[in-house]
Image 1 (cartoon, rainbow, N blue to C red):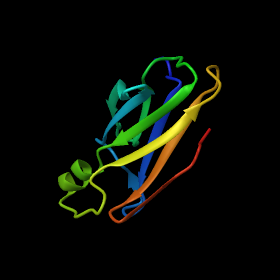
Image 2 (cartoon, rainbow, N blue to C red):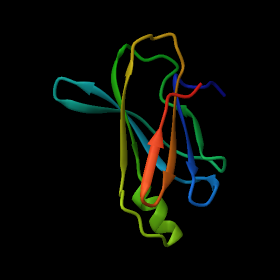
Image 3 (cartoon, one colour):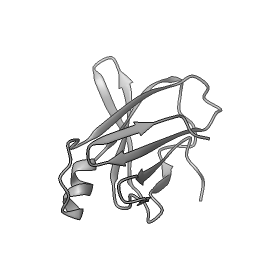
Length: 113
């Protein structure tokens, strides 16, 4: 399997486990808004390694995480029905890993490796 240029990993910090089965969309910014590039679902380890192409042009991108559906499936209330993370790809040759640390009432992120 080829790893895409953008990957993600979700850890449910409330349970201390990977967040499996979360739908994630990758979007590119264009003149009219956001254009879908790819979509995927986190695996049992909370990861998506094949989200989108191997190479993307420099520009602005967004990852959309369907966190409300994830927590609904667990029977857990959440304050965030979805999480959008906007980031910039400045080097078309670099790998961009965008992890999400998630709980029902908080989230954080960072640029991973």
